[in-house]
Image (cartoon, rainbow, N blue to C red):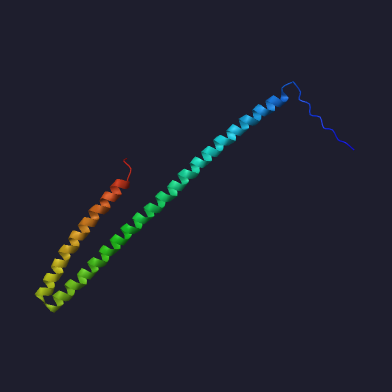
Length: 122
């Protein structure tokens, strides 16, 4: 038994129309895929930026909490020095306060600069 298949190409242009429509559809799919790839890249960049921002925020929180702890420690040291009526201890607390003030001032400026750098102009 033999089977013969004959494909007839009609000259009426239907196949040509279908092929052109297929090419057009294929181009649209390529454009959509390129747009999707661009969106995915932008989303990845956004995720990275948010992670970096979270790191900066966590650092600022740590800085502020550290300053609060340092000030609480200074307050206790001063109270202890006054209670003991020890002029040397009181002077040590005063010196420590100067150092803490300088440290807080430097960190405050660094934080202000970082916030200003990351804040878009209005």
